[in-house]
Length: 403
Image 1 (cartoon, rainbow, N blue to C red):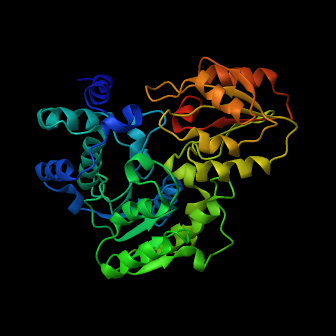
Image 2 (cartoon, rainbow, N blue to C red):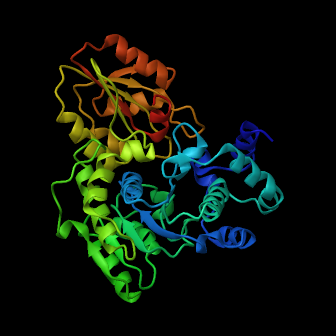
């Protein structure tokens, strides 16, 4: 198979949560355990850091990888979802996995994958673990896909676990309270493995403390001893919370020499070292066009606060969501004096743009419906003056169509 044919088979034959939603979710670890047994347990052949959380886990994972790269280590990085190319999910020192490896891996295990009906995420996790083991990485930063306890990545025993933030997202799978969601995220805590919590929250603090105590795991709340003075090329004031968690994680990492210079340079060169896209990414100036992948209430609140700190004459917002998102809960966060361009991301889960406009009108947000994300951005650019600002977001999949 060619690379395109391989991806078509992966995307088409096997359900993917990002495309299909709940129908793609296989909330158990049996399949990934069985698959990794067939692969000769690659997850046991490299050291790792495990990162979970509602917001900030992607940025934090990339910061960690960048710092460890600057310290001279060969660093694997597994994240999801991708924005442009599937291979963004699996990187070593910022370089994506080769097309030949993807093709050969799927061809070599196609019969098993087909027979056992593994999910897209399960096969991708197995691929990443095999790649990191084969390439003999010094350490890999592994980002949880969804939740924690029953996520396919949760068969590793890391050097440190990091939980970034708990918010109301994926409530149909993880629970309808912060406490229930925290229990799922806390599932990545392993016996006698230190765990760092980036952000102390009243509703979740005791849950993390209790589980860490039961497992005899050291627990560190990073914001209790915040460290200032570090700069990062990831824009947005909200990155300060992520930096605290990342620094605490590095400090808990044993048997790795990470000098101060590597920390400083790693934080300043995250995009260069890892190729991260879509975090307060500036697409152009005059007018200022910014996109961000924030997609739940807590994340969007931080991003909108950042928008309000910018200097502009008029604000234009190209906005789209997926239909399993609680849009009614997030629309009140958006400014009523902006001009809106309602769009639908080009995936089956994309929320209808007319329905989005109707919900927005109920919240006092007015604007026009556009047939695509690109059309929405073009319309905004047509109406924006040089001193205006255009924000593109609401969903990872909206951002994926403009970066």
